[in-house]
Image (cartoon, rainbow, N blue to C red; front, side, top):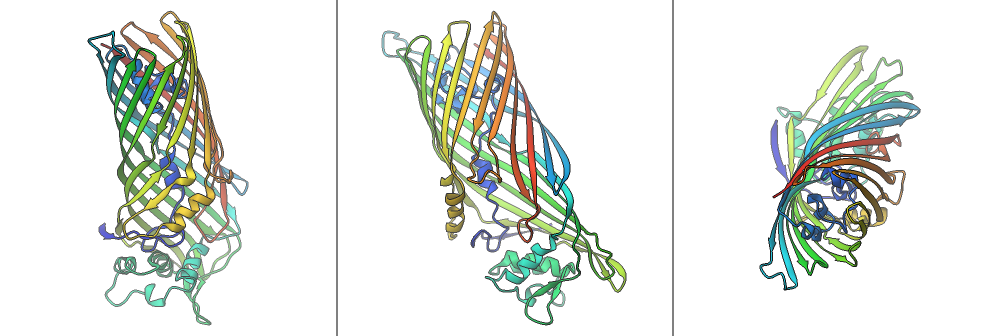
Length: 510
């Protein structure tokens, strides 16, 4: 495919000269999964006042100061996902599996030469962690009385600041290909709407309205079989540098500097069949879109742990906002079956272009975490974390672009969330048994868009002395809704997502 480069601008909730704005993208990048070492996962991430685990520094960077020896760990993870969709009474299922390496790292302990001074040791750590894996697949199917062709008709009739797209923008000139015209429209005001109208016009879904300005659908019907499948793959990972201090074995302080790496691909396909007995006009369509998003960013963490007694520990930490600079590559195509004079014709309207948009920055929200832990000597422990994060502070920005309407959307539709994590561990000689629970509010004020998250976890570990092998299991579920297409219809599928994570970690002290 030919690749073209154009600036990224926004108008309302749609991008001028770009693909449509999807609010879920920033929410997805702001959400952190429980995806660390097997011990961390088995206790559902409740490590803010504990430390002593490579992944604990994700919650509180002071936790590295709890290590007494140099330490490294390596984790493999299998994620199993099943999404159940219900659309107009029809149930569909989609599954996706992902094998990955979500966490590895090392901590190096430098003891003070003078143990009579307050600073007992300094630790330095480096780790690579997965904040989120984006491997996800949803599939919905059913019969509706609303056609997705209205998506194209709306863009055609109202996409030019409330008016119709000019006919010159949907018709190719002599010697001009569909790809040439698609490329030309990238440089025009309301270019995205014009491109959608052009695809539909070239695919014979819409015709010029001879009676007045604008366009009409090429065909009629009141019953449509529809399928939509969305597939996402990729990650939001971070490389972390950590330093922590042990002061009188009573106060532990730490800080992280994080470099984030984002890379994910979202593909969607919408199929529709007109169930009417068509003899002239539209019969079937397949509309495909693909967005590849990639970039990098940075953030920092600071935190402290206070050992009130030998048993009771109190932790507090702050995660800064994450500033991520991203770039999108976008492709789309439309295939249609059209009856013309009693003959069925197939049209493949494929511009054959990869559109490369200008870079933009997302500021994802920071968070505060308070933690308590009680250690029962060598027998076990209980731990509790509470995190507050305000998703309404998400912000888009880019040089020469106005994102006011987008940022207002987040202010008006998202909210601050409360997240609770509880974890416990019980030790029987060399064996450790673990369990945990997590609850997180939805970032959306409207729970129909995305529901609250509930998660349960368990695990087991075996100590060989200087090394350890741990197995962890996490289950979480969350309900959401998904529009069949972004505009033109009110068709919505209800999605129930169930996820299973199985992780195995080998760690050793030296």
